[in-house]
Amino acid sequence: MKLECVEESFGLVVTVPEARIDASVAIQFKDQMRDVTQDVQGRIVLDMGNVEFVDSSGLGAIVAALKHLQDGQQMELAALSPTVAKVFRLTRMDKVFPIHASVADVAGAMANAS
Amino acid sequence: MPPDITERSCSTTAPPGLPGKWTGVEAKLVASNAKVSEFLSTLDQKLAPLSLDEDTLGSVQIVFGEVLNNIVEHAYNDAGCGDIVLCIGREADRIVVQVEDFGRAMPNGELPEKRQADLDVDIQLLPEGGFGWFLIHELVENLTYTRRDNRNLVSFEMCLVGNPQDEVA
Image (cartoon, rainbow over all chains, first blue to last red; front, side):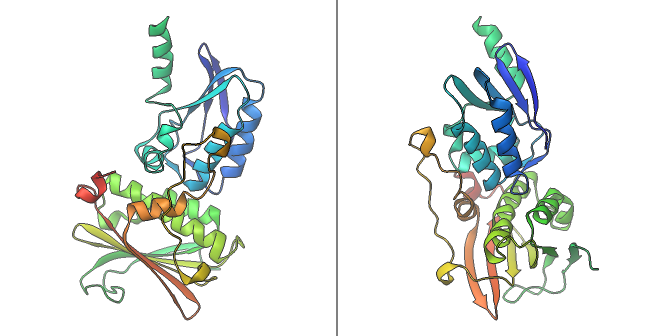
């Protein structure tokens, strides 16, 4: 797994290139999130558009990334698949993370606000 | 060397306690996180004989992920070997699942309880684990565990989507 990062006007978009964040890649994901979010200021939007499945280990790794944020950083999620959204909803993690329908929605909300 | 994951249709061999006329899939896989991941990534093809809808397949994938990785981690202690045998059948508006392994017994000989983590806490205190059995309990019915002849047998049922049970959450 290699997370892809693009700096947008509203913040850093981190895209997960894989279809799964599960027990076989959870530690790798957690370590890479730590690396790519180092010294970033402001919003970090995790683009989950390619991710079809997250298990409890993957969910734990996403929570770990949230807990590792530094002062001045916020983490948000975008483009959850129906199955991924179900995992967040059942565990009530959808109340912990701001969740957007798509990355374009995040950008659009910024454009409308300005 | 036998393949790591094998499947066969077991439409004529219903598990004990189930009706004789039964459409099902049996799968055997090696207990490692990588093999579980590989198995689940093509679950839709493997379960094609059961004609499940997308939403149900999503729930099945969530539950299988938790049950199987729990076996990898706890029954087989992350050794990366050991067998898991799954039997999945469809009966009208539900699926019936049996999962068997040959590893260590569950602690105290019983299934972990359903426990919802407290999320109304400071971010630093949020849980990073313990979601697995909660998700399983939330998505299945008639969950049972039996230890017999050095084997663990977990069985459960899942209602197909469209059934009110799945719409409550």
